[in-house]
Image (spheres, each protein chain N blue to C red):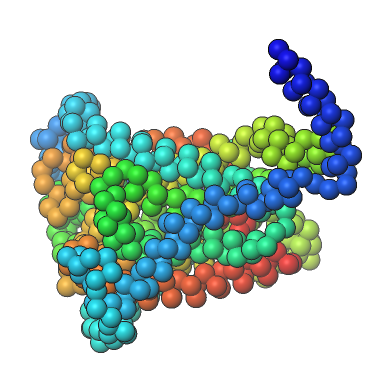
Length: 275
Length: 312
């Protein structure tokens, strides 16, 4: 009994050490964001101080931050809506029916998710320039579908496969068309799947830097692009402002993470491992 | 009014006849439902993936510059590829990326497995630890990199304060590569851990119980029972991480932009500089096709592994 208790303490100690290692950088950054400029550069560093919210107030009143926030929101929502609209029926067909080209579609979706984004970005940039689409949010939304569409199809296919086939079949027997059965019988039952796919795609889109860095201008840039501009080259002296904006950028994704915790594994492995 | 009556009569007739018809033959729409359901996805994929890749293949065999019209380049055959393969910077970048990928992925898998084993122990409050650990892997990579940039700052960074030395982490080739790697390991070891934890939770209990009754030590159980059973999950984690580390860009861009002295010049960074800084888009297209080739090999391994696992 005593040995078990000692073991338990050892495990908790190891876990606590782990949490400290993995969360310290973020906690320290959060701390910096709550310091005044003098406190940030105090030597030795301050571990106890009365927090100030002036950095957050300054960040939130910046016009470029607000603009980038709106842009991030628009392109993420756009990419996710487009992917869901287009991808969910495809996922259903892939899960339920056999048709010519099914395996090709599978392979293409998987490649789309796995191949390096820069390979698609270069020709996209040239083609979008020729069409006058670069620096528009539309171009970013289209670029984001290269990762969000495969993710939606992959996650949703898993959810459709877990649903008993009898549900639609009885609807078909009752005279519903394939489309009606899909819309009125199947879709309402996989709402949790839709939510999971939605959150995981939002996270990816929100976090993307490469596509947005190339395909946006100052007016259409997203938050990660703005953050990279803040920190490019020299780190400068406005650490309070930079860390405050960093915290504001990652806050939504941390909330997503907690919301989608149950479905993380399905999304991470793109369906390769069923949790 | 009259129209409505006719319509009602018409629909009644259809309603009476429809079930018979359906039994005999599905309507055209129903027969083609799967094809129509995948049509939008197929079109979108052609638009944002198929077409760009084809164009990029063509671009890589041209000598094209942005001031020319879209198809105004001169045919260059394999010149761009030959230029790349004789460019010491590209070869250096290729070797660096492969080494970096191997080291980072090994570290992520090692750390991830350790964390997964710890998180698999059933204890009160363990859920809280599991939840806390997913935070690093969810956050924006650019922000993560820039947080670490402040942590390793030579003058005001807290890491130099802790170790009591003045190290210019991002200014020296060896420490710069180490810093860039640590950020990715920090972000993605939890990712591996969560994946492996799912594997551990799904393993059967009987083999472990049997071995314990037979008097096997914990290390023996881990090495001879848990690891072999976990192998499919380890392989999936390994290949996914290989594929995603191979394209590392965000952390490099923010922390070092490939420097100092190309010490952190990953292939993505090299290709980015060639395309969107020097605007040598034909060469960059060739470079990205080399990356594609390597990724296709990795991806092929991934599909083989997943297929084999499904068959089991």
